[in-house]
Image 1 (spheres, helix red, strand yellow):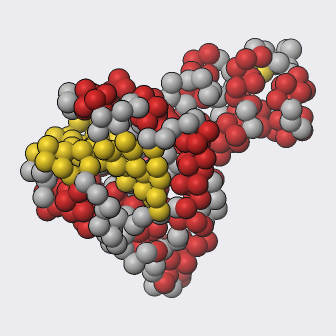
Image 2 (cartoon, rainbow, N blue to C red):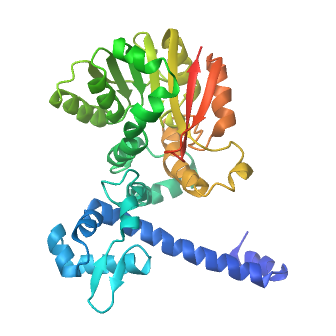
Image 3 (cartoon, rainbow, N blue to C red):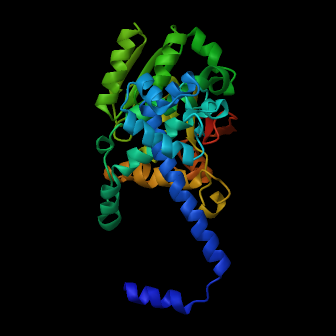
Length: 364
């Protein structure tokens, strides 16, 4: 349809002026919110939130000196943060302050640092032109085209997975911690930089851990860290589980936010099921969403999840000639694929610390 035809169609349809104005106002708010998120990412990466929280009320020059940054850029960043309601300014003294209630969500010592997730706006924006090309021609964008993906993913994992492993995630199955203490063979599929495995290998020295991923660079970094910590019970291997059978049997297989990215999630789940020893456990973290679009409209995070999916999760799968299920494949498909893979005892858990993910405990 030509632009002139579209304009004519809009003019001939009756418009609700109040609805039109409300949508425009809401979308303008979204534009400002997106800008705040982009600047939040910069504040996180440069350490400005940490410096501002530690310093108390400061001038832009004092903050720049404390953070070791250029004052002119810091001053403009502060303008975005003040107008966005993140940082407060005393107009008389020209001193800026990060309220403690905001610092509790934006600093590196916060239990849940929302600034970490803000980094995805820039990471995904960097491949926008490639995604637009995929809209026209199909296909996808490969993992190695996403700058800083594994770095940002490792930060996310440290908050949602690693920090919660001991208290929330592993106790979902009461047998896991005693068995890990005694000694288990553990596999992590799509381990990335290996943050979860590094934590478990150190905490459970009698168990043996293997991490597999498609990214050689991420695994090289994980191997260096394991060597630095002297963890001889932890190893990493480049492996596409959708293309090859797993090398041996395991007592526990984990997959944290990884299955939906695979080219063939169905084959990956089947091979995981076959690789489990009798009595073995599969622990899977997946995005909390419903399969049907209309059932996600009440979820305030749904637009973010679909955007992450469209611009990364779905695309990296399609780049491998895969199924492109996407991050928001949803609970119905998760259950269906687990059952088709041979799992019969499947329990889904929601954890209070993690509003974005579900956790599945599955046995054959």
